[in-house]
Image: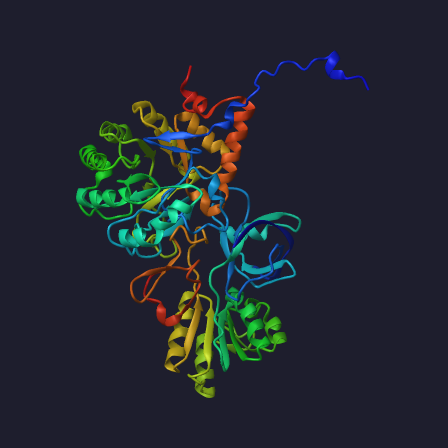
Length: 322
Length: 262
């Protein structure tokens, strides 16, 4: 056999090194190996799904919302399924700061991924106390300020719908921590960019767009609301087009990274959000249906970038160009 | 807990609206009362998996029985042998068989029989005397009653229309039975799975005779793996425990029976 390569020398490879290799993203002073985070409230405290999920493939886990005191959560029933969506009214059932620091935080240095603590307060003072405590947690990669839970009755100020209150809570947190501050916004406002700018102006490092939409269903047989609390927050593929629009708008209005969270089930969904301007994405409801969704989406994004010879940075906001 | 893709070996209607499904499943160990989460199709409607009690799981074959009444179960009834389903399991805790158990009284209605089948198998294997009060609207609701008999369980059928056994409510027949036989509060125990109202009544009757009751709770469930906190059952002390993780089997006295479930 003649050596064919001699007669037809291999054409010089146009792309000797696929660009997609590098999926690292930076939020504040911390970097993450990939842009796929597990959304708060859908992955416990990071120690529930160890049987099914390869943590080394997750960019970060965001904990269940943590409050100063333990919370029992809302009465039952707390969930109702709807077409391509899930309405929940969990009411921030959580073990409280003390148990978190004692039982969960010590696990984090050994996890194969990074952990971001989602914190929830009903006053500036509570947010401050939680922020101070999180500063002392070893290996913590950031704080997500939950100013947007739709399922908790007003304890004081409803921070997330009020730009001034948002300013206050972010300003206080910023003055107390060097950890990345991510602010989780509510979609239940007329113009999310106003709140987004207020958070960015006070030094937030990133914004999560967004929490769930207030919604409800009625049990026609029983002639009453399907949820004990009447209203809950809807998540899942049903809300994707609306959150996508908001990610587009918010990422155009602020310079800090936007983390998209809204009904991402597939690689295709994740790509849409990145193209709309998101720097990272959160997988939430999809984990309930497929605990390996995050793995599959990560592999899909890698494939897409490689086959299109793009970097992650190239992809972010690419749909806005031209 | 495993997540796997599972081949459907059969999916047969064994009585009107009741289906018996056999799936190829790569594991062989589970406990009576545990369940699996099954994605009934590969679309977003319905979005969530459905929780199904394990009827049997041996020689890598998983069996379930379900009643096709809602969106998810009707969709499941359309699946054909040769198709694949996504399954997670086994999940949850299990019925406990205490040492020295004297007589096991099982009470069920309709498709609630499903988790009681592996329990009956475990009880009869240990040669524990087992009675099943099996209720339903009609004879066709008393599915797989012969399988219970074949295990050596004393089956007492009860139907609303009188088409088999005594006519009336299974809980009334249970109470008559207890009145006549006087169960032993020290050694006997009650095990139940079925409609919420039936289980509550079973718990009350058992309590009158000093018997403890183990109940398998049915509730709306999203993840089945402990992370969503959607399926919680309210306890007497006001706390909420996950049916998928701390349950689905509870002792009747743990539960706040006045809490709304659906």
